[in-house]
Image (tube, rainbow, N blue to C red; front, side):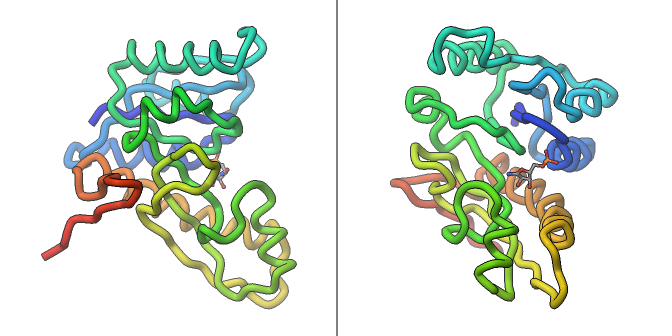
Length: 202
Ligand code: GRF
């Protein structure tokens, strides 16, 4: 399945998806990377791997809808079938989300439905939870609220600070996202009636 990754920054999850997709047996192909920030480090990484990149800045459009529309047009020209958000730091509008419903996924650095939104690791430490992790989910109208596709758990260790915990979760993200995108691309994880339907594994 032709997949386009949307980023805003570092792009380490994007890099993990590109690495997985370099295996010819992997069911998704990364055909492009779109960033809303011209200085996103991930752009250079993608370009170095021969992947088409495009910067679509919010500042170049008069409205959020026009910005979303430009992204949608770029997706069409890339022949995208799946959109994977990977550290894309902007909320997409209703029209765009509805158009891509069931075909757009996101990775979130917490075990949803806990810790939606930003600063998940600091909040996890403050809450004193002992198990933290990451979630890949279908993107729906409410932020970090869509049907869950896959999750990975990591322990919170005594003495952890935010950076230590973030690094441990990020490692799990890099394993989880390729797995989850693979399930969606193969049709083994589908969104139906607002829920994720997972194929039974023999
Ligand atoms: C990741 O933790 C991801 O879950 C998120 O933002 C971070 C992006 O990192 N919401 P990267 O750009 O993939 O390195």
